[in-house]
Length: 121
Image (cartoon, rainbow, N blue to C red; front, side, top):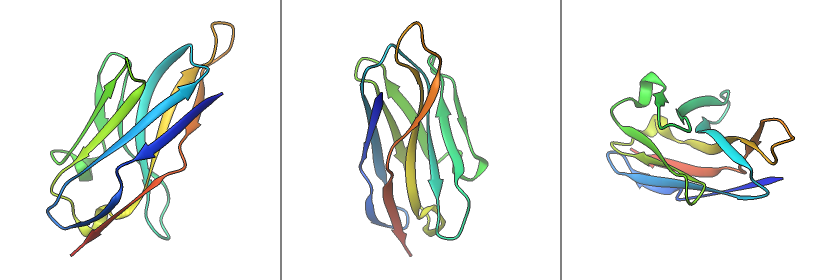
């Protein structure tokens, strides 16, 4: 199995920055795409950003130009640099990884437990 541990959440004032990290560990044969989702109170979980194994990135429109996703393949870690934060960015942020635990197995999605980001106005 693959375990994901997120860190870096917290309380920040509007206009501030935070950097989230998500480290994958366990039995890992290969990690494909990595990404970040978020869920605000009483809202559905939404995809924030993804990064492929080759480094291609995608972002939801609301964070373009403010957030940057990156990965360190040697450390099996994905990052989300969040700048110019707004109160509407307040949510629990979840790491998601598409990975394979062996060459004979198939790709699966794994989730972290989430880290809370609160942006005050």
